[in-house]
Length: 330
Image (cartoon, rainbow, N blue to C red; front, side, top):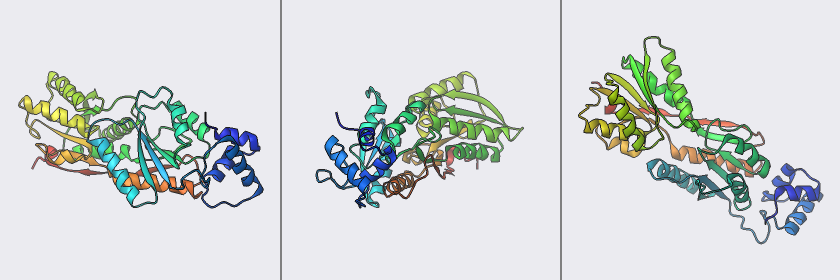
């Protein structure tokens, strides 16, 4: 078993934060404490930048649950394109449900890479504290908003995205709205839902007439439409918490002779490329995955270079709504 930062810390009598900073610093200061740290790390077999057996190439692991669908391919490409403009290499790592102990697994990755970006929507909130304690001052961030306190976060402003969708419906004069939410344990979905509902609650003449909990797949969009049709709803504005659910909903609606936007209007979230190729084209809240990758990589690089000493920072990237035929009443 490989040594841990805690073991090096205990042997040297120095804090985990001090040990971590020394072992990931490219330019050594050769102070007595740092010499003690380097000697202990070599003795215990803990890898560090500058060790003759370790590459000094800055590599950042994007740890996620790799699933099918354009969302994940867009996420990966955004990070890949951003890495080409930075001084870092991105390594994609699948940490799906088959990982028995995600905390230990993520801590083990900190021994292999210069930094870690976590995009794990199903990771339990309490695990983040354990991960942070396990890696100490190691550069690690989450791409899920509001999921933790001690780990820095870089994410899209999902709340504003939901708010924008409801505002768009209000401006079109709709009195009835509906929402297909994401799963309850998905923090991003909660932010989008809360933004949507808060905007509606600001206007007494708008009613949230229908809700359905989906799971971000097109299949759940089809299930949502079946529920929608059974309730006989029309002349309603629907917000789908992601584009995949909207696609399934619209496909089922078309197969049942519903006309969009005559019978209802619909808007999604993520602005994936297929929004422009389906009929009608889908209005969607646009996210910039390359901007997300760039901001995440920059944050990790600042941590590596000791330019970011504040823990628990939240960086929210702006979103905007792309209006297309699915909400066009002209």
